[in-house]
Structure formats: structure tokens, C-alpha cells
Length: 599
Image 1 (cartoon, rainbow, N blue to C red):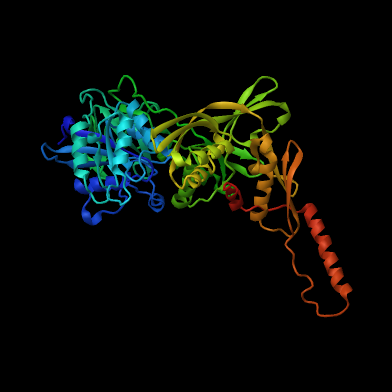
Image 2: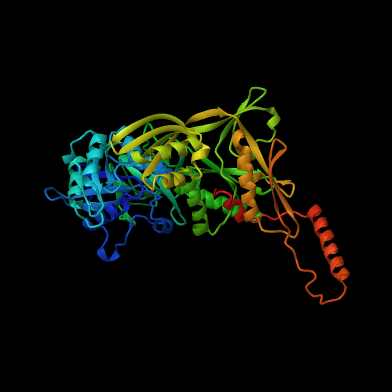
């Protein structure tokens, strides 16, 4: 029996990282009896082991709860738990497109943070009903009144409208759920119209093919219906439909306003795309739903299999990861030094690290990863312009007139006492000051513009250190800006190693080159001959370090006698090392490339 459309509530939880979203979701599951107490565990909706280990949400996770409010009939509550880290903002944007309301959760000990502002702005643009709540009121250092004041000024509402809860103890959680039922509007849509369902996520199942996670906007879909993915222009018979409880639970049908899954039966991964519209093959919708904007990937790196024979295995693994992570991008690439591989695009360094970890855990693959880079716009003497994604693509610098690098608009929220330290850090990162706004007398929002390349590697860690952890940031790409940049090459034993090449500000090239060769000196294993490490700019060596030879004790077995015997052996060893230096090649282990990422 299908639930009345008026009794459906679709909502998400929005918050900065570590403000208690997953814990609040756990309390909702307990309160509604969705999961039995004996089966409950912390971070119930964080299904990946890497999420539990790191204590962060990486993938949005929907769940359907049945709830009877204190003064009303039974309701279906579809909750989507969202990530909080800036690298996974695309997951949040897709979640918000599938709901009518959002709980804005703020940690009472930390107050409003940068991602709180960013997520709120997205929700307001979509016209969602926002329900604010202050969390962690049970902690001894909770500043509830201060947090409520910040939210009140941010939303321009009375402090009395803001609930305060403890997701850990459950205090105030039922009142929050009651408010969701009262204030979040039911979904609108026409059950008699042709099927329109928005795909907001998907996974691959060996038996069911691509399983699309959808929000039904119009019409109904049931098992054995023949559906069409409008962008993919492909038809298939539905193998199963159902809802998330939070595991898959099969249903007779999915109808207007509901959030659930469709086992499409498609075996070809590229037939189903996130943001596409599912309709019926024989009774098609006239127009597709508005999908999602393509995510802005900011970090590019190349992945190569350690064994050339594993190329197809790596490609299949990346294809399945892309199905489950629409923000991930890859395409084939050929390297003279490393062979066949893939150039990949990521939303940030954490996103890249998660992909690397998932390849290892889920598919048993540990690929070689090159040094990450941002994209650059290059102009040539003949007037042509093109985008490069790796420094290796910048082969002939003599024909180049200028390089433009991507800049970001930075919003940094911190306490006023750390203002000087943050501004100094931004100056060191080539930041350009734009504006300052005080959220409260104690909390200030800084606006800067800065090169993306300075932000993606370790800026966040340095920001946390400079502010004793009391700072958060959000950024968005604003376009390319021309700067005096050059390609810095790294030579190991006289051979150019393209994966170590970097595009750097010309004024800082010597400093960065010296730092890089010194780091390589520490992490490249010693060889049987001396190895020179050089950083070069346009053919001119700007920094050098040397790795001494691994020396074998060739005189250890001698006992007494004339010293000339020992000297002859040492001279013979010296000549052997000299010859080896001339013909030998340095074998660089794969882990060295990844260690270079860490400044």
C-alpha cells in the first residue's frame, strides 16, 4: 500500500565536518525504530570502512524511516546524510537537489564554520526549508548562547526558533524530528504523469547491473517496467525497485515524491549517469529533469599500474569507482617513462587520497601516483591557447608566451585573535586580500583570492596550526590569472623524471627546487653508485643534491699483510662504480612518488 504523498518528508542534514551529522542520523534511526537496538552501531550510515576509521562521511547515504508524530498520522521520512568536508561538496549539492528541507547543524563548542556558510548558501539558492539546531549541548565547553546568536544573525531569525540538542544523548532529538514533520513541505508531483526520476547516485552490482539511487518526481516505476535513461538513450527492463532501510528493501513500486533505488539491469556502466532522468520507454516524459552542474575538479594526477599487464584491471576498477563517485574523472594517458595509465581529476587532495585508498581496499590495486598538479592555461606565440593538466604536457617552453594558473575565492572563518597569523599565512601563499566581515565581535570572516596550487597541498594543515585549530575554510574557483610561472624539471642521475616536474613561480623556483632535491635525497634508496639529483629551469640547473653510493666492504675478508692488497681492491671497486654510474639507471620505487606529495 502506497503512502499518501502529503505524508512524505524528504530532508538532509547539513553541517561542517565533525559537527555531529552521522551521530544525529543514528539517533533518528533509533527513535523511529528503523534499526533494532541490538543491531545499532555508531555511524550507522557510514557504510565504508574508511569512513569509520577516519571518522568522516565521504558518501551521502539515504535512509527511509517510518515515524508517527505525537499529533499526526504515520509519515515517511527520507533522510540523506551528507559529508561535511570541502572536497565532498558535490555530494552535498546532489543531496539537496533531491529534498525539500534541511537541518542546519552547528557544534555548540565551535559555532558557525566556513562549510556551514557554504552549505547554507546552497540550500537557500534551492529554496529549501532550513531548520537550525545547535548540537553537543552536553559538553562542558559548549557555548550554546553564542552559537545561537551566530545562527540568529546568519538566518535573520529569532534565537527562540533555534533548537538545542545533543545527538549523543538524544536530548531534544524528538522535538527536532517533530519540527521536520511540521515545517518541511511534502513533495509536489503528479502520479498520473509519465515517470520522471532523477538519478542522484549509483553503484554496480554483479547480478543486478547498475543500481540507480533516484528521487521520483512524477509518475511511478515498478519491477519489469521497461525504462529509458534519457541522456544515455538506452532501454532496459527493471529487475527490482525498493527503498533504503538503510539496507536495500524491495518494494512493489516507487511513486511520486519517494526516494529509493532502481536495479536497472544495465551491465554497461556508461549507460547510467548521475544527473540523468529515468522515464518509461513506452510512455516517455517530454523533457528531462534539470540535472547537476559538472563538478569543478581542481587536482590532477596520473595513475599507472605497477605492472603493464594490469592496465585493464585498473581501468575496470576506475570505471566502477566513477559510477559510485560522479565527481571523479579519468581518461587514458601515455607516458614515455611509465607506460600506459590514466590522467585523473579530483575535487581536492583528500578526495585523491580516498580514491587511492578505495582502489587498495576494494580492488586490491596499489597504482603509482604522480605528483598532483592543477590545470594551467598556456598561450603560444602563434596565438593559440590550450589547457594542460600535467607539467609533462609543457614540452616546448620556447614557443610559450605566458602561463595562467587557476585562482580561488577563499573564505576563512577564524577567531579575531588569530587574524594576524592567518593574514601572514595567506601572504606567504601569494594571497590577495579582498575583504573582512565580522560575524560576531569574536569571529571574523576573511575574503581572499589565491592561486589554487598554493591551497590544495597542505594549506589547511598550516591554517589549523596557525590558529590552534580555530579556523575553517571554503573555496571556489574564479578563473585563470596570468603569472610569471615556469616548468621546473627534476633530473635523477642525469635522466629527466617527468612525474617529478612541477610548474612553479619563477621567483620561488630556486627555493622550491632546493627543497625538492633535498627531500628526494632522503627518500630515494641508495644505489651501488653515486646519484646526482638536479632541479633545472629552462636547461639551467638551479639546485643540486647527491646521494652517496651504497658501499660494500670488499676488504673485510683480508687479515693483515701488505696494505697494497687492500688498496688494489678499493681501486677496483672505485672503477666498477664509475662504470656503473655511466651505464646504470636508478630504480625509483612507487612509494617515492607518493611521498613527494607531502611537503
